[in-house]
Each structure stands twice: as C-alpha cells, then as structure tokens.
Image 1 (spheres, one colour):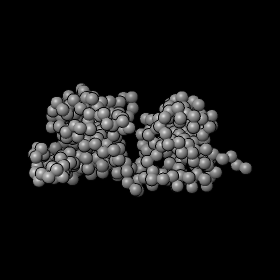
Image 2 (cartoon, rainbow, N blue to C red):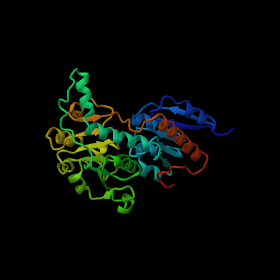
Image 3 (cartoon, rainbow, N blue to C red):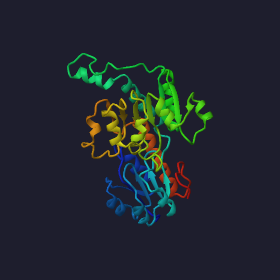
Image 4 (cartoon, rainbow, N blue to C red):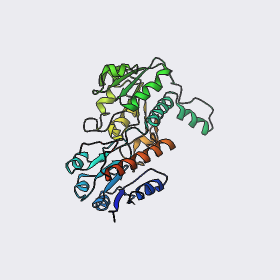
Length: 321
C-alpha cells in the first residue's frame, strides 16, 4: 500500500476545508487542521508532516529543524515573512507562496482607501448615521487632480494601482531600487528617491514586502519628511509601520491621517491607540479578499503541495532546493 501523506494546515481564512480535504484525499494525503498559531503546538504537529500549509501562523526555525520528513511549507498568500525561509532551505524543504492571486483585489482596495480618505467618506457617513446631515469635520476636502501619489514599491500590485489611479489625474512617483526608470515609465510613473517622494506626495502608499530592510520603514524620520496634508495608505504588511510614530504623527498634525488594512498585531487590537484616532480608517486585513481570489488561492496552494509530494517542480517556488 502506498504511503499516506500528512499535510498540516495551521490556520486559514477559507469558508470551509472541503476542497482541500477532497483534493488531498485523491492523492492519498490526509489534511490535519491544527487551528492554532501557537508555536509549540505547531512544532509538535508538524514534526512528522510531509507538507505544511500556513496563513498567519509563524513557522519558526526550531519547528522546521524538528521536521523529520517535510518536503514543503506553503504560505496561503504572498508574503513569506512568517516562514523562516533560510532554515527551510538549509533543511532542503521547498517553500512556496502564491504571488499572483489577489492583484486586482489589493489594488482595488488600495484605490478605495485612497478615495475614502480623500473624499472623507467615513466621516461624512458617520455624520449622517449620527443624525447630522452636514459636512462637519470634513470641510478640508481637496480634489485629487493635480496632486501627487507616491508608491513605495513597484511590484504587480503597485503597477495596477498606478493604472487604476491614472484617470484621476494624479502625478505618480515610485521608489523601488529593484525596478528601472524605464519600467516605471511604461506605466506613466516617474522613478524617484524615497525622501523626494515623501516630501512631494499627497498620498503615500506602502506596497513593499516586509524584510529586514523594510521593517518599520515608516518611522519617526519617515513621517517627519511627509507633507502635513499627506496621508499614508498601507495594504501590504503591518510591520512596515512603526505604529507609535504613526500615531504621534497624526495626533500632532505632522500628517493628515492614515488608511490601514494591516497592523503590527492583528490579534490584540483593543489597546491599539490608532483604533480611536481621528482621520484613520482601518480594515481587517481584507484587501486580498474576493470569492474569486479565495478560490484561486485554494487551487494554486493545493496544486503546488501535491506537485512537490509527487516529486514535481512547484509553480511558485520561493527558495531554490
């Protein structure tokens, strides 16, 4: 009888696990749902796994070193900062992600946040729901045409943001040391330095991966260089922003506000001062979501997990094994 594979799923954002269970069963693999982000529980569950799938849970170096037969670790998403890729590589374990499943959704969400901040949509709606048919607290609206949009990072999502914002008549600048000026120009975007963008942009959008170099890139110095009438948008990773510095920048009037889909800590949110901060919009890490993107994500994750179990090359490798 052929060996039965064990696939551990730490956590997920799916409506159910029927698709995963059925697809894996067809290749003699059992899905073991852990439903935990606890590192000790994860280490115990994955030590004899053939494959691990994670969403938000950290797959630490110690958990990886304790794996006895694991072939792959897959992120159900784009950023792999919650997986110790270096250790996985040292242990000969393939790491995968899905870098192209929600480009439309995240770029749409970013544009929606930009428009909501610029047009004071949340404040105006709040006035009405509180019984006041007025523009109280929202009279500093300016038109977007002629303003400057700064995109920090110029990957697939930022490029779609640039395309979708172009009809609004904004000048778009981007900072990305890995993308040429010629590549940006193809999207009617001008390449510029980080500091130049911060000094010019009325809207600063974070579209960077979270790395050692970008961790808390939006810090006190960052905000001190922004225009006082500018606001920050982050639909990438919470760790890009020093939230204490952001809070101080907003309450002091150093910048005008922020729209965030991600936070440093997305579990314990009640003590976060940004929650009660005026001119801040926060959505619950939902930019990636649509019914279509979720199904696409599920299909691509399982396809790559099965491919590696069967000794084939995955479609979306992160490391080289």
